[in-house]
Length: 238
Image 1 (cartoon, rainbow, N blue to C red):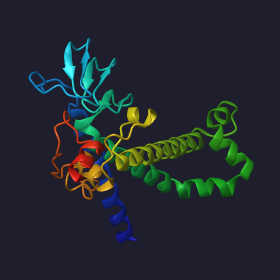
Image 2: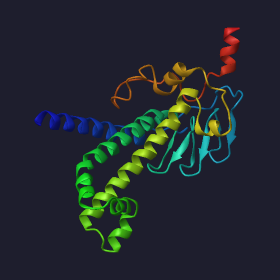
Image 3: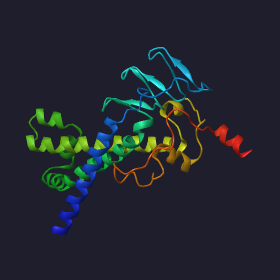
Image 4: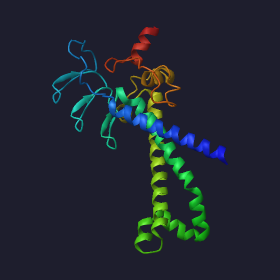
């Protein structure tokens, strides 16, 4: 009915605004050491010298050969968007994964009725071959161009949603543990201060709401240069 269509349009607009907003924030945010005053800072444990950047760099930083600069709290280089994920853009990256998965799932659901009609008109084996090998079915003349397009778009959306969902689960685990991908691969837990503190450190004080709107103010408590460690918390408690 009209109400269902209105709700569907509202959901689509909400998802699209979040998706595009987080893409814009991710690309606009610079997680690198460019413009960051590192000279004169106390060089403590974890600091290193980057010969490519010719600069002292703080703990958890890493040099990216693609970006050609050191990244504060470097996680990894996102090849899809051509930027590193680091201290300054981790929040929009996580929200982007969430809303990209949501958009792709929404498109898959919208294609459901057309797929159901196609299933009723063909055998299950034919449909399985169409969904698994759409290019082969098109080249052999077993399906029309419209049927191929339907199967190809569905496959792309489902695969993309699964990849984004898997990435979100993985980075959600890292988020709760206070780790970067590099630290996780090496079994380092030096910055795990508990789930609540880890969430605030990465997403700001309004971490529970940032998923709903990309432009919600939630300033990060740190500067990407100094980080509290589990050892610091232990000394403070004692």
